[in-house]
Structures are given as C-alpha cells and as structure tokens.
Length: 328
Image (cartoon, rainbow, N blue to C red; front, side):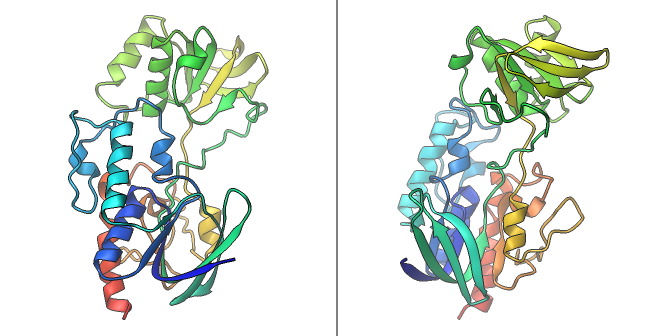
C-alpha cells in the first residue's frame, strides 16, 4: 500500500471537483483528485448524442474558454473540454480509485481507496473536499422485477431497441429525450409518469415535441400511473382505469438520482431533515466535520435540481478562500 501526502484531496473528478482542485492549486496548495470512474465520469455516462441545455461559457472552469461550434455544446465537446482543462493545469488525477474509508481528523486525514483489481492505496491530506455528485445512485422504485437485466436506470443510445417494446418511466427531461429518440429510431415506446402531465421543468423546445408525439399516438403515454411489477415479457401498470399488463422488452426507469448519503454519514457529516441536506457552512462550504468541505450537488441533498455545473463550478473559489485562512 503506497501513501502520498497532499494539502488538499478532492474526492470526485467531475467539473465541480476539477474546479475545486484548480482553485486550491492556484491558492498555492498541493492537490490530488481521486475518482471511482474516469475523468468526468457522470458526463461520460450521459446519452451518447446528448446536447447540454446551457451555453459553453456557463460550463467553463479555471478561466479556460470553452469553444464550441454550437450554441449548446454536445457531450463529446464537453468531455474534450474538461480533458484539456485537466491537462492545462497539470492536475494529479487518480482515476478508477474507489474511496472506501476516511480516517483521521482535520490536518491529518487518511483516505483509503481500492482500484479495479482490488489493490488498496492510502492518501494523506490536511483537508478534504467531497464533490461526488449524484448520478451514480438512481432512485429505485422497489418493485418486483426491478433487478431484471432488461431494466436500466440510464439511457445511452437508441439503436439496440429498434422494433422493441420499450417502457420509459419518468416525466422530466431525461424521460422525454429518451422517449423521443427511441421513437425516432424505430422503438415502440410507452411512457409512464405518476404526474398528470409531463413535468413543468421539461425544456421549452422539448415539451411540445413529446406532447405532439403523445397526442398523435406515436408515443403511448399513461399519466397518473405507476409501474407495480416488471416481468420477463411484460410490465404491470396501476392506471386511473385500473391494473393493466402490457407487452414489454426493455425498461428505462429514469426516476432520478441522489447523492451518496451513506458515504457522507460514514465520513461524519450530519444529514439534516431539510431535504436530506448535509450540514455545512453556507459561506465556506465546510461541513460539520472540521476540514471536510462539500462542493457541487451533494450540498443540495434530495433537491438535485438546485445545483448544476453552472453554479457548482464556483464552489471551489469559496473553499479556496477558507483554505487560505486556515492552511499555513
């Protein structure tokens, strides 16, 4: 087991984690990042042809311009941009290192990790920044059949589902986009949402498209409905007209995601009753555990729609200012 000592260790190498590392490094501290996946792992697992809802400049970190040929950048452009930023700042990023435990206290933390081959490492740091996001943990429905191989909580691309009966569960942007793309590539799409209509937060250029497809009968939709069981060749729905069983080959349960609350609790961070928000100082982002800072969407608890790359990217500056006051 090898050990490396740094001033600041950042857990999570997404855009917010990178921004935190850059700001800490600019402040003169030695910095190390660890991530259980690849660089910007969550972005990598977004749909292959995804287009962001925002503009390139709102995704920028480290004062590095994000050049794009499009008004709204694509996933592939964003991945390239963050690779270039990491290279520009010569960030020390340990990919595929899963953090298992955090020991010690302020000024003397030890972070234990394990790689893909079960090899263990340990890193020592004076301060920790947890920027682990939320995309790795889907909100489960806890229904029979949810663990069948045909069920996925992530949508990537449409081709494998041509001419198949596909159920999309959800009513927000991800569900609308998946349903539309699957239908346009030949899948037989059914959408189920517990609400009375598509969610009001669906983007204005997507909402009329999915609503028109539903009105035309091209995408079959059940509102005020839930899935109560997933079987090998069908799904059972609870609808306003009663229980209904329909043919099905694949299910995309796009029911949202949540931060890793258990990981935060194991590190000693208290979770409040206010939407499961981790306790932290709003001015410095230091948690109730001295020396452990929180950045990005983990701060929002269950309300993951409050923090995005656009505002989470500034958390590094807030933390760096506090680090300059406390680290000598």
